[in-house]
Length: 267
Image (cartoon, rainbow, N blue to C red; front, side, top):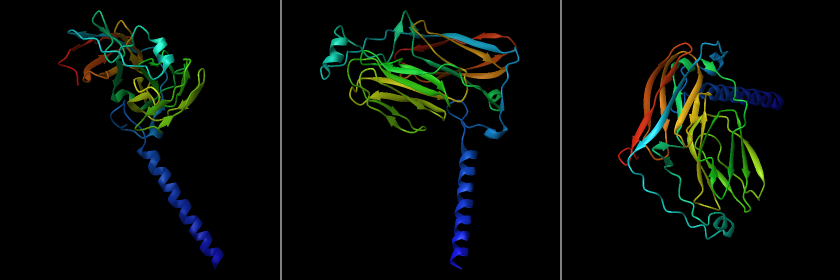
């Protein structure tokens, strides 16, 4: 009788676990960074380029005089202070000749909901350089492995302040590195250093490969888009989100540029 009761309990627990895993699988997924997929993961098919893909490109600019930020005090770490003798101003709004850097630009579209996309071949990388997180903004695909290296002659403790993916932080001696797999799409989250509070960067984990981050010239290009209707989304750490609807035809290149006004567009 005892053996029969034990087997019945085992069968019940196994069924409950299977139901839990099935529920979790059906609940997963995200559209772009903000919505949810209309289709379940098992209904999505791998997208095969057909030679009909198009692109969206543009420039992000700022109107208005952005005042320089004061340099943070690095006296607590002599190495950091020596690496920044001429000052290390905050890079919250990096503007050069009106062009805005460190802007994440990506697309949202029902066109993408029924597909899954191969991971980009390169490994996304962050690092500590001159006691700052570099690059300031990084975007990657869900399922990619992120590489982080300490390039300074001092210790760092990078911390990923995620809300969707698991929280992560690790102490690094000079020259040390680590890799971390980020499997779930997530809006830009903060990466900071627990030893140097002035260090700050952002990582966005995307469900598809159609995104870009602007450089010093404010330019972005999102290539390989299947023909269809898109909403271009612009994210910046200080400015309010901006959006624009764009239709892309076969082998078509469209321009979608954005201008923020300082200080009225600061959130």
